[in-house]
Image (cartoon, rainbow, N blue to C red; front, side, top):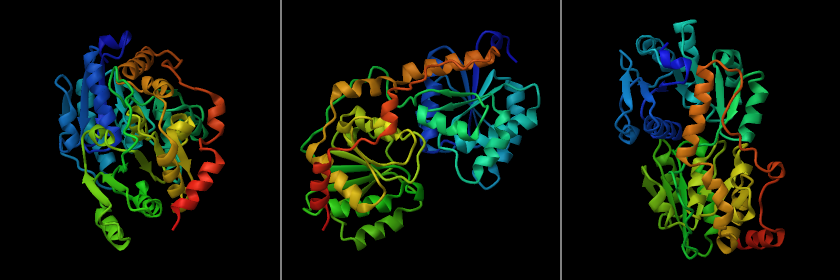
Length: 397
Protein backbone atom coordinates (compact mmCIF):
# COMPACT_ATOMS: atom_id res chain seq x y z
CA UNK A 1 0.00 0.00 0.00
CA UNK A 2 1.03 3.63 -0.43
CA UNK A 3 2.91 5.34 2.41
CA UNK A 4 0.03 7.88 2.62
CA UNK A 5 -2.21 5.11 3.83
CA UNK A 6 -0.58 5.40 7.28
CA UNK A 7 -2.20 8.85 7.67
CA UNK A 8 -5.17 8.95 5.31
CA UNK A 9 -6.80 7.36 2.28
CA UNK A 10 -4.90 9.41 -0.28
CA UNK A 11 -5.69 7.25 -3.30
CA UNK A 12 -9.33 6.14 -3.66
CA UNK A 13 -10.43 3.68 -6.33
CA UNK A 14 -14.12 3.51 -7.31
CA UNK A 15 -15.56 0.39 -8.93
CA UNK A 16 -18.04 1.17 -11.72
CA UNK A 17 -19.10 -1.47 -14.23
CA UNK A 18 -19.88 1.26 -16.77
CA UNK A 19 -21.10 4.84 -16.99
CA UNK A 20 -24.82 4.19 -17.09
CA UNK A 21 -27.43 6.76 -16.08
CA UNK A 22 -28.18 5.05 -12.76
CA UNK A 23 -28.36 7.14 -9.61
CA UNK A 24 -25.53 5.22 -7.91
CA UNK A 25 -23.16 5.97 -10.78
CA UNK A 26 -24.04 9.67 -10.87
CA UNK A 27 -23.56 10.06 -7.12
CA UNK A 28 -20.23 8.21 -7.26
CA UNK A 29 -18.99 10.55 -9.97
CA UNK A 30 -20.10 13.60 -7.98
CA UNK A 31 -18.16 12.32 -4.98
CA UNK A 32 -15.11 11.56 -7.11
CA UNK A 33 -15.09 15.11 -8.48
CA UNK A 34 -15.37 16.58 -4.98
CA UNK A 35 -12.69 14.30 -3.52
CA UNK A 36 -10.25 15.47 -6.19
CA UNK A 37 -11.06 19.08 -5.24
CA UNK A 38 -10.15 18.11 -1.66
CA UNK A 39 -6.70 16.99 -2.82
CA UNK A 40 -7.23 13.22 -3.07
CA UNK A 41 -6.22 10.98 -5.95
CA UNK A 42 -9.25 9.21 -7.45
CA UNK A 43 -9.29 6.44 -10.06
CA UNK A 44 -12.48 4.95 -11.49
CA UNK A 45 -11.97 1.27 -12.35
CA UNK A 46 -14.52 0.13 -14.92
CA UNK A 47 -15.44 -2.67 -17.31
CA UNK A 48 -16.21 -0.37 -20.21
CA UNK A 49 -15.90 3.37 -20.70
CA UNK A 50 -19.26 3.56 -22.49
CA UNK A 51 -22.22 5.43 -21.06
CA UNK A 52 -23.61 8.97 -20.85
CA UNK A 53 -22.54 9.49 -17.23
CA UNK A 54 -18.90 9.68 -18.32
CA UNK A 55 -19.53 13.25 -19.43
CA UNK A 56 -20.04 14.19 -15.77
CA UNK A 57 -16.44 13.34 -14.81
CA UNK A 58 -14.28 16.39 -14.22
CA UNK A 59 -10.56 16.74 -15.05
CA UNK A 60 -8.37 15.18 -12.41
CA UNK A 61 -10.40 11.99 -11.98
CA UNK A 62 -8.54 9.11 -13.65
CA UNK A 63 -10.30 6.31 -15.53
CA UNK A 64 -8.85 2.82 -15.96
CA UNK A 65 -10.64 0.09 -17.88
CA UNK A 66 -10.13 -3.60 -17.21
CA UNK A 67 -7.67 -5.24 -19.58
CA UNK A 68 -10.54 -6.97 -21.37
CA UNK A 69 -13.65 -4.87 -21.99
CA UNK A 70 -16.47 -6.20 -19.81
CA UNK A 71 -20.08 -5.30 -20.54
CA UNK A 72 -23.00 -6.17 -18.31
CA UNK A 73 -24.21 -9.75 -18.48
CA UNK A 74 -25.27 -12.50 -16.09
CA UNK A 75 -21.74 -13.25 -14.86
CA UNK A 76 -20.05 -9.99 -15.82
CA UNK A 77 -19.47 -8.79 -12.25
CA UNK A 78 -17.39 -11.87 -11.46
CA UNK A 79 -15.47 -11.44 -14.71
CA UNK A 80 -14.95 -7.75 -13.97
CA UNK A 81 -13.51 -8.50 -10.53
CA UNK A 82 -11.03 -10.99 -12.01
CA UNK A 83 -10.00 -8.60 -14.79
CA UNK A 84 -9.55 -5.65 -12.44
CA UNK A 85 -7.26 -7.60 -10.11
CA UNK A 86 -4.17 -6.58 -12.06
CA UNK A 87 -5.26 -2.92 -12.07
CA UNK A 88 -5.69 -2.95 -8.30
CA UNK A 89 -2.35 -4.63 -7.67
CA UNK A 90 -0.53 -2.17 -9.93
CA UNK A 91 -2.25 0.98 -8.65
CA UNK A 92 -2.23 -0.11 -4.98
CA UNK A 93 -4.99 2.30 -3.89
CA UNK A 94 -5.50 2.90 -0.21
CA UNK A 95 -9.20 2.19 -0.43
CA UNK A 96 -11.72 0.73 -2.87
CA UNK A 97 -15.27 2.10 -2.87
CA UNK A 98 -18.24 0.30 -4.44
CA UNK A 99 -21.09 2.79 -4.99
CA UNK A 100 -24.07 0.44 -4.63
CA UNK A 101 -25.56 -3.01 -4.23
CA UNK A 102 -25.06 -3.86 -7.90
CA UNK A 103 -21.28 -3.75 -7.37
CA UNK A 104 -21.33 -5.77 -4.15
CA UNK A 105 -20.26 -9.03 -5.91
CA UNK A 106 -17.38 -7.21 -7.64
CA UNK A 107 -15.82 -5.90 -4.47
CA UNK A 108 -16.39 -9.18 -2.60
CA UNK A 109 -14.78 -11.21 -5.42
CA UNK A 110 -11.82 -8.81 -5.53
CA UNK A 111 -11.18 -9.69 -1.91
CA UNK A 112 -10.77 -13.32 -2.90
CA UNK A 113 -8.62 -12.65 -5.95
CA UNK A 114 -6.23 -10.20 -4.24
CA UNK A 115 -5.90 -11.93 -0.89
CA UNK A 116 -4.52 -10.45 2.31
CA UNK A 117 -2.49 -7.68 0.69
CA UNK A 118 -5.61 -5.75 -0.28
CA UNK A 119 -6.85 -2.19 0.16
CA UNK A 120 -9.60 -1.22 2.57
CA UNK A 121 -12.96 -2.05 0.99
CA UNK A 122 -16.14 -0.02 1.49
CA UNK A 123 -19.56 -0.61 -0.06
CA UNK A 124 -22.50 1.79 -0.11
CA UNK A 125 -25.91 0.18 0.37
CA UNK A 126 -27.93 1.77 -2.42
CA UNK A 127 -31.03 -0.38 -1.86
CA UNK A 128 -32.52 -2.29 1.08
CA UNK A 129 -31.29 -5.86 1.53
CA UNK A 130 -34.16 -8.24 0.94
CA UNK A 131 -35.13 -11.32 -1.05
CA UNK A 132 -32.96 -14.37 -1.71
CA UNK A 133 -29.86 -12.27 -2.39
CA UNK A 134 -29.74 -11.07 1.23
CA UNK A 135 -28.23 -14.41 2.33
CA UNK A 136 -25.54 -14.13 -0.35
CA UNK A 137 -24.75 -10.65 0.95
CA UNK A 138 -24.71 -11.86 4.53
CA UNK A 139 -22.30 -14.67 3.63
CA UNK A 140 -19.84 -12.29 1.98
CA UNK A 141 -20.25 -9.25 4.23
CA UNK A 142 -17.19 -10.26 6.25
CA UNK A 143 -15.08 -9.38 3.22
CA UNK A 144 -16.15 -5.72 3.37
CA UNK A 145 -14.49 -3.44 5.92
CA UNK A 146 -17.46 -1.07 6.17
CA UNK A 147 -20.83 -0.36 4.64
CA UNK A 148 -22.40 3.06 4.16
CA UNK A 149 -26.14 3.48 4.65
CA UNK A 150 -27.80 6.67 3.44
CA UNK A 151 -30.19 7.14 6.36
CA UNK A 152 -30.87 5.89 9.85
CA UNK A 153 -33.80 3.84 8.60
CA UNK A 154 -31.67 2.12 5.96
CA UNK A 155 -28.94 1.54 8.55
CA UNK A 156 -31.35 -0.14 10.95
CA UNK A 157 -32.71 -2.28 8.13
CA UNK A 158 -29.20 -3.30 7.04
CA UNK A 159 -28.20 -4.37 10.55
CA UNK A 160 -30.95 -7.00 10.47
CA UNK A 161 -29.05 -8.76 7.68
CA UNK A 162 -25.45 -7.62 8.21
CA UNK A 163 -25.26 -8.29 11.92
CA UNK A 164 -21.83 -7.42 13.27
CA UNK A 165 -20.82 -5.45 10.17
CA UNK A 166 -19.51 -1.91 10.39
CA UNK A 167 -22.22 0.40 9.06
CA UNK A 168 -21.74 4.15 8.85
CA UNK A 169 -24.71 6.45 8.26
CA UNK A 170 -23.87 9.22 5.79
CA UNK A 171 -26.39 11.33 3.86
CA UNK A 172 -26.64 11.05 0.08
CA UNK A 173 -24.73 13.96 -1.58
CA UNK A 174 -27.59 14.95 -3.85
CA UNK A 175 -27.34 18.75 -3.93
CA UNK A 176 -24.75 21.28 -4.97
CA UNK A 177 -22.72 23.24 -2.44
CA UNK A 178 -24.37 26.38 -1.08
CA UNK A 179 -27.73 25.52 -2.67
CA UNK A 180 -30.53 27.79 -1.47
CA UNK A 181 -34.10 26.48 -1.22
CA UNK A 182 -36.27 27.88 -3.99
CA UNK A 183 -40.04 28.19 -4.27
CA UNK A 184 -42.22 26.35 -6.81
CA UNK A 185 -45.02 27.83 -8.90
CA UNK A 186 -48.30 27.10 -7.07
CA UNK A 187 -50.30 27.74 -10.24
CA UNK A 188 -48.55 25.04 -12.29
CA UNK A 189 -50.57 22.03 -13.46
CA UNK A 190 -47.54 19.87 -14.28
CA UNK A 191 -46.88 16.59 -12.45
CA UNK A 192 -43.40 15.13 -12.94
CA UNK A 193 -42.25 11.51 -12.62
CA UNK A 194 -38.61 10.51 -13.06
CA UNK A 195 -36.61 7.28 -13.20
CA UNK A 196 -35.62 4.38 -15.40
CA UNK A 197 -38.60 2.88 -17.20
CA UNK A 198 -38.38 -0.46 -15.41
CA UNK A 199 -40.71 -2.54 -13.26
CA UNK A 200 -39.22 -1.29 -9.98
CA UNK A 201 -40.40 2.28 -10.69
CA UNK A 202 -43.98 1.11 -11.32
CA UNK A 203 -44.93 3.87 -13.77
CA UNK A 204 -48.08 1.93 -14.68
CA UNK A 205 -49.36 2.82 -11.21
CA UNK A 206 -48.45 6.47 -11.79
CA UNK A 207 -50.46 6.50 -15.02
CA UNK A 208 -53.49 4.94 -13.32
CA UNK A 209 -53.32 7.38 -10.41
CA UNK A 210 -53.01 10.35 -12.76
CA UNK A 211 -56.05 9.20 -14.74
CA UNK A 212 -58.15 9.27 -11.55
CA UNK A 213 -56.69 12.57 -10.33
CA UNK A 214 -57.11 14.38 -13.65
CA UNK A 215 -60.89 14.11 -13.80
CA UNK A 216 -61.10 17.81 -14.69
CA UNK A 217 -58.64 17.32 -17.56
CA UNK A 218 -56.54 20.37 -16.65
CA UNK A 219 -53.31 18.64 -15.54
CA UNK A 220 -50.34 17.24 -17.44
CA UNK A 221 -47.85 14.55 -16.48
CA UNK A 222 -44.27 14.35 -17.76
CA UNK A 223 -42.28 11.13 -17.33
CA UNK A 224 -38.51 11.62 -17.47
CA UNK A 225 -36.26 8.63 -18.15
CA UNK A 226 -35.67 5.82 -20.59
CA UNK A 227 -35.83 2.05 -20.26
CA UNK A 228 -37.21 -1.23 -21.59
CA UNK A 229 -40.81 -0.52 -20.55
CA UNK A 230 -41.30 2.58 -22.68
CA UNK A 231 -43.37 0.93 -25.42
CA UNK A 232 -45.53 -0.87 -22.87
CA UNK A 233 -46.20 2.38 -21.04
CA UNK A 234 -46.96 4.22 -24.28
CA UNK A 235 -49.59 1.61 -25.12
CA UNK A 236 -51.09 1.94 -21.66
CA UNK A 237 -51.32 5.71 -22.05
CA UNK A 238 -53.11 5.36 -25.38
CA UNK A 239 -55.55 2.78 -23.99
CA UNK A 240 -56.30 5.08 -21.05
CA UNK A 241 -57.10 7.99 -23.39
CA UNK A 242 -54.31 10.08 -21.87
CA UNK A 243 -52.31 10.75 -25.01
CA UNK A 244 -52.90 14.51 -24.77
CA UNK A 245 -52.03 14.68 -21.08
CA UNK A 246 -49.10 12.29 -20.41
CA UNK A 247 -45.80 12.68 -22.25
CA UNK A 248 -42.28 11.25 -22.12
CA UNK A 249 -39.30 13.56 -21.81
CA UNK A 250 -36.53 10.95 -22.18
CA UNK A 251 -33.35 10.98 -20.13
CA UNK A 252 -32.20 14.38 -18.86
CA UNK A 253 -28.85 15.07 -17.23
CA UNK A 254 -30.34 17.77 -15.00
CA UNK A 255 -33.91 17.52 -13.71
CA UNK A 256 -33.75 21.01 -12.20
CA UNK A 257 -35.20 23.00 -15.14
CA UNK A 258 -38.17 20.62 -15.33
CA UNK A 259 -38.80 20.75 -11.58
CA UNK A 260 -38.81 24.55 -11.81
CA UNK A 261 -42.02 24.25 -13.87
CA UNK A 262 -43.65 21.50 -11.78
CA UNK A 263 -46.43 21.63 -9.21
CA UNK A 264 -45.76 18.15 -7.81
CA UNK A 265 -43.35 15.22 -8.06
CA UNK A 266 -44.96 11.77 -8.11
CA UNK A 267 -42.99 8.63 -7.22
CA UNK A 268 -44.69 5.20 -7.37
CA UNK A 269 -41.71 2.86 -6.91
CA UNK A 270 -42.10 -0.63 -5.46
CA UNK A 271 -38.84 -0.18 -3.54
CA UNK A 272 -36.02 2.33 -3.31
CA UNK A 273 -32.83 2.84 -1.36
CA UNK A 274 -32.64 6.57 -0.79
CA UNK A 275 -34.80 8.25 -3.46
CA UNK A 276 -32.70 11.29 -4.35
CA UNK A 277 -35.29 12.76 -6.68
CA UNK A 278 -37.56 13.48 -3.69
CA UNK A 279 -34.83 15.63 -2.12
CA UNK A 280 -34.15 17.34 -5.46
CA UNK A 281 -37.82 18.24 -5.79
CA UNK A 282 -38.18 19.50 -2.22
CA UNK A 283 -35.02 21.59 -2.55
CA UNK A 284 -36.83 23.45 -5.33
CA UNK A 285 -39.96 23.87 -3.28
CA UNK A 286 -41.91 21.19 -5.16
CA UNK A 287 -44.07 19.00 -2.89
CA UNK A 288 -44.14 15.23 -3.41
CA UNK A 289 -46.52 12.29 -3.42
CA UNK A 290 -44.79 8.96 -2.96
CA UNK A 291 -45.41 5.34 -2.12
CA UNK A 292 -43.91 4.04 1.12
CA UNK A 293 -41.10 2.43 -0.86
CA UNK A 294 -38.07 2.94 1.39
CA UNK A 295 -37.14 2.86 5.08
CA UNK A 296 -35.83 6.39 4.46
CA UNK A 297 -39.12 7.92 3.30
CA UNK A 298 -40.02 9.18 6.78
CA UNK A 299 -36.65 10.92 7.04
CA UNK A 300 -37.29 12.84 3.81
CA UNK A 301 -41.02 13.62 3.89
CA UNK A 302 -41.08 14.34 7.62
CA UNK A 303 -43.40 17.35 7.45
CA UNK A 304 -47.02 17.36 6.21
CA UNK A 305 -46.22 20.44 4.14
CA UNK A 306 -43.68 18.44 2.13
CA UNK A 307 -46.34 16.14 0.64
CA UNK A 308 -48.01 12.80 1.28
CA UNK A 309 -46.78 9.22 1.66
CA UNK A 310 -49.52 7.02 0.22
CA UNK A 311 -50.39 3.36 -0.06
CA UNK A 312 -49.69 1.76 -3.43
CA UNK A 313 -53.12 1.86 -5.04
CA UNK A 314 -54.42 4.26 -7.71
CA UNK A 315 -57.31 5.65 -5.67
CA UNK A 316 -55.19 6.60 -2.66
CA UNK A 317 -52.46 8.08 -4.81
CA UNK A 318 -55.02 10.08 -6.80
CA UNK A 319 -56.52 11.41 -3.57
CA UNK A 320 -53.06 12.39 -2.36
CA UNK A 321 -52.26 14.17 -5.64
CA UNK A 322 -55.47 16.18 -5.49
CA UNK A 323 -54.95 17.01 -1.84
CA UNK A 324 -51.37 18.21 -2.33
CA UNK A 325 -52.21 20.27 -5.42
CA UNK A 326 -54.96 22.03 -3.44
CA UNK A 327 -53.16 22.60 -0.17
CA UNK A 328 -49.44 21.84 0.07
CA UNK A 329 -46.52 24.18 -0.57
CA UNK A 330 -43.40 23.38 1.50
CA UNK A 331 -42.15 25.94 4.00
CA UNK A 332 -38.59 26.94 2.91
CA UNK A 333 -37.52 27.33 6.54
CA UNK A 334 -38.53 23.74 7.33
CA UNK A 335 -36.80 22.51 4.16
CA UNK A 336 -33.47 24.17 5.01
CA UNK A 337 -32.15 21.40 7.35
CA UNK A 338 -33.08 18.69 4.82
CA UNK A 339 -31.28 20.56 2.05
CA UNK A 340 -28.25 21.36 4.19
CA UNK A 341 -27.43 17.77 5.09
CA UNK A 342 -27.42 16.67 1.42
CA UNK A 343 -24.89 19.19 0.10
CA UNK A 344 -22.03 17.56 -1.80
CA UNK A 345 -19.28 19.61 -0.10
CA UNK A 346 -20.29 18.53 3.41
CA UNK A 347 -21.03 14.88 2.66
CA UNK A 348 -17.83 14.37 0.67
CA UNK A 349 -15.83 15.43 3.73
CA UNK A 350 -17.77 13.00 5.94
CA UNK A 351 -16.83 10.20 3.53
CA UNK A 352 -13.17 11.21 3.66
CA UNK A 353 -13.22 11.18 7.45
CA UNK A 354 -14.60 7.65 7.36
CA UNK A 355 -12.08 6.53 4.72
CA UNK A 356 -9.14 8.01 6.64
CA UNK A 357 -10.20 6.30 9.84
CA UNK A 358 -10.52 2.95 8.09
CA UNK A 359 -7.18 3.41 6.32
CA UNK A 360 -5.57 3.96 9.71
CA UNK A 361 -7.09 0.76 11.02
CA UNK A 362 -9.08 2.39 13.82
CA UNK A 363 -12.06 0.39 15.01
CA UNK A 364 -14.71 3.12 15.17
CA UNK A 365 -16.76 4.52 12.33
CA UNK A 366 -16.57 8.28 11.93
CA UNK A 367 -18.80 10.63 10.02
CA UNK A 368 -22.03 12.22 11.06
CA UNK A 369 -25.10 10.09 11.65
CA UNK A 370 -28.24 12.13 11.11
CA UNK A 371 -30.74 10.40 13.35
CA UNK A 372 -33.15 13.32 13.46
CA UNK A 373 -36.30 13.17 15.55
CA UNK A 374 -37.11 9.57 16.47
CA UNK A 375 -40.81 10.44 16.69
CA UNK A 376 -40.75 11.20 12.99
CA UNK A 377 -39.69 7.65 12.20
CA UNK A 378 -42.87 6.24 13.71
CA UNK A 379 -45.45 7.98 11.56
CA UNK A 380 -46.27 8.80 7.96
CA UNK A 381 -46.91 12.45 7.12
CA UNK A 382 -50.46 12.96 5.87
CA UNK A 383 -52.67 15.99 5.64
CA UNK A 384 -55.61 16.11 8.02
CA UNK A 385 -58.29 13.49 7.49
CA UNK A 386 -61.06 15.84 6.34
CA UNK A 387 -58.88 17.20 3.55
CA UNK A 388 -57.81 13.73 2.47
CA UNK A 389 -61.42 12.51 2.46
CA UNK A 390 -62.48 15.52 0.40
CA UNK A 391 -59.66 14.95 -2.08
CA UNK A 392 -60.46 11.24 -2.42
CA UNK A 393 -64.08 11.97 -3.35
CA UNK A 394 -63.10 14.54 -5.94
CA UNK A 395 -60.32 12.41 -7.45
CA UNK A 396 -62.34 9.30 -8.19
CA UNK A 397 -64.52 9.09 -11.32
